[in-house]
Image: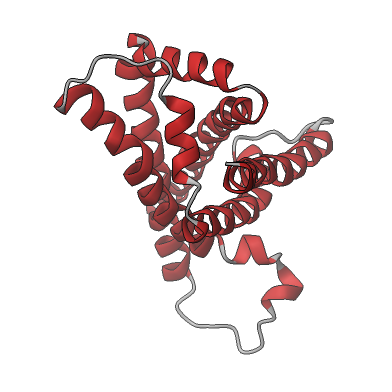
Length: 221
């Protein structure tokens, strides 16, 4: 009975982890779309960013939900990693990780930690200045400031390089995470192979677009 309850709790944790991952994947798609607009049109990017920055629904509902989703996903990742390690206290005598699983699946915790560090840098570069601008300094809204602020962050080659490396690690994380999330929520049907391919494309295209955005603003401004 105890083993059954423990198994059910483990399954629930994996499903919760998967659902938070799918939620963050949706956010990534929206985020990269908004940021890529900056490559196409400065004015449209400013308008879209200003709308996002002052829309009450986004600021006071979606933003806290997103913050909770990020924290929850990383905490559950650490919990499940510790749980899996505890379940196998004795290392296998001859274990060839590369023969049993991809690099991305074997190193989700590493790529996750790098992404967590990247989020810290991202908050430092964009979120904290935004909070200071709007709520601490109380500066009047300026709908034309967003493009210049974005470009300024990518002047520094070291910062740009850190962003690009983080995006590559994000791709590795998504390569395993997307398919794993779908599997954990029970998407085992005739569309599973198609959805897996969509996940692999997403893991390549979205990080690549982020890298293109960073390099475009670094070299063109």
